[in-house]
Length: 235
Image 1 (cartoon, rainbow, N blue to C red):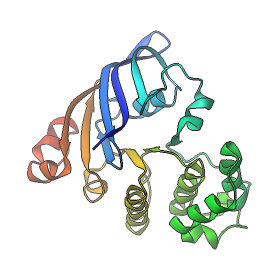
Image 2: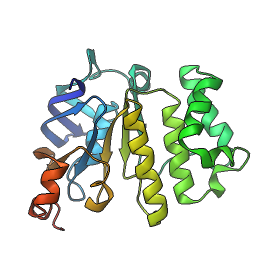
Image 3: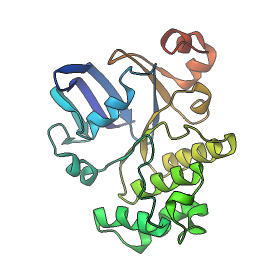
């Protein structure tokens, strides 16, 4: 299987404080790759580094043959990477339709893309005229993902998409991620809870102190829960 995204030797800083240390990670095409680790381990910073939102002084982030390191943050989505940050960051006073239109305008896409995205998240089709701030948490998460997918990304970055959601909504988000894999989208998924990723992830990388310590297949994770306890502190 070919690689969709390759990170190698990445050192990243907030000001003068180093937060990633020679981080390396490979995302395969069509893969759901989960990042697990304690709070402050560097998971979210890894996603921000891919998007050019954190200063990288050494190392490389490559999307296929495209070098992303050094690109302005607004150019990274145009290259084919979409990011759904923790907290969703929707325009609460705008309708569902208006939030989706913002994603479409970024890549100047049209009706066909809009319809394809709404096919993945059918509940949004019923809420198009509703203000996004009045949606449930799960519906807001689906809208944030829908807006990102309007960019027609090759790679999607999701930062804790199930945080604060009810079990029924968590299941729907997992189904959406699985659906994207079937459509050829490669996904990096940051999560805190192991049970949220076992049914959808292909591989899991454990991040500790700004470094990838170990990467395992999800079957190995099921067989040896002590791996999770070693890096995250829970089983």
